[in-house]
Length: 419
Image (cartoon, rainbow, N blue to C red; front, side, top):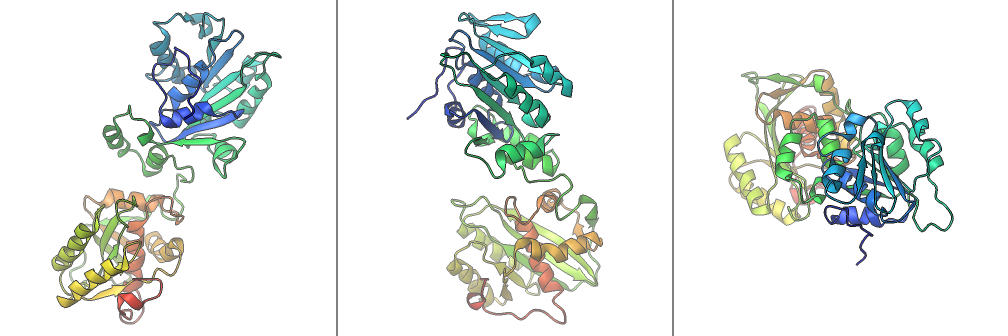
């Protein structure tokens, strides 16, 4: 197994994703995506890999100096690693000098013109922390000072790390992420790739962010756009009750595969129609293995009552398992029908988009509201975010607004494209 070149100045051994990043021989490479993935340590380790060799000079950059000096940022982290070593800190130059004569300098480019401050330098390592905070012209300009003398056995490297977002989002995504390049590899690191992080506490903190920012920081999602692709927050309206004379309801289920093979949720949504308005009255959502899923659906049917039909989409569940649920419910007098998922998710959601925009899609106020709306705001139909709750709404609309009368019900095992 290959291990990266390290010096005594690295405070800890690299985690697997960091090690992969440090082993790359390419001139350019990009690391990160999600928050908490160990980006700062990876950049600092990379800068320290050759400080034992005379003539080596490394540069680490952040857009502004205060960002460099924040707790656990690059500069403060370098002091944690190097203060008790034989490296010398030269405060006036923001530079570490090593016994070999090698240097590690910290810089910033708050303004576009600040890039010229590095004109005439000679660096063998240039590291960019939160690259999306920089402009593409700043990034490309410094390649003019990535150089070495003949015969010096030090690789020339430009290394960057960043979360999605900020002013440079699009150019960074195009250069490194989408569609990706063999010449400029991207090592995607997530929260789980940093075992030193208190993951559960961090996830609780991220839960308070807006859905777009949370998706970017938690999952390193480069495709999420701030305004939402299909739904907007202001389209959602809320009520405390549904009209008393509401009679037409349906409970639709989108069931995930086994927890061993999927991070999707099993979701059951109770929806109703009153005139042209569609209500979401209740959402049940969780990750369950099959025995618990079966029990949940049966118990929910009993709580809803016999007058609420039950729609089930396969969504990865084994057909025999779904048929077992159907048979059990039908023996007890419940109406069960299969949902034919014969269109792509975005197309299926179009009627809900129109309902929401017309303020005719109303949610009953409850604890599930925030996660429900957040999912709709992140939804793009490309499968890159959770869409189980959107699917239940699309399926419910097809039932509740199926023209005159309810849709024809067929046995689950013979409906093409459905369960």
